[in-house]
Length: 144
Image (cartoon, rainbow, N blue to C red; front, side, top):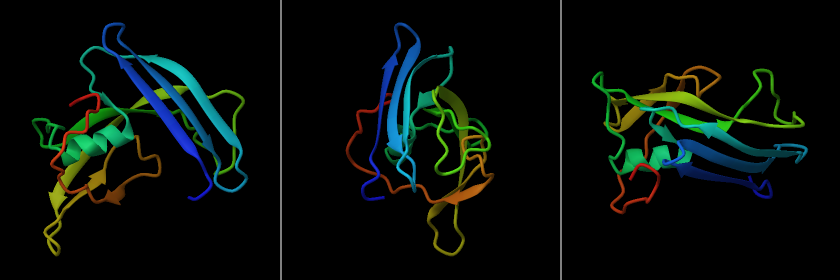
């Protein structure tokens, strides 16, 4: 939305096995400030992305499917209270890793890929999404 600035900075430190997450954004209506400056441990064997990198990795076919065909990762994000409204703010925010699994299928009518978010990352339950088309250039994200 125009005028509602939001910025996140994610640093993956594979030597120290940690993720530094910094976020600054404004609430939707009242433009209240939400700020996160947090570090979370990087569990061994866990694939971690931010939302943008996961999308770009899908588009570049760099997000390999699991044995069941689902695409799984963990997303780092601002920890959201279960009862948080669009303009609620907290004195201090933390980052969290949440599992995110995408099951991609082909729409029978359009023959385009579609998916259902089947993970905790979508807190309002299942949401229909359309994956992006493939891109030709590499993104340079953390898993490329």
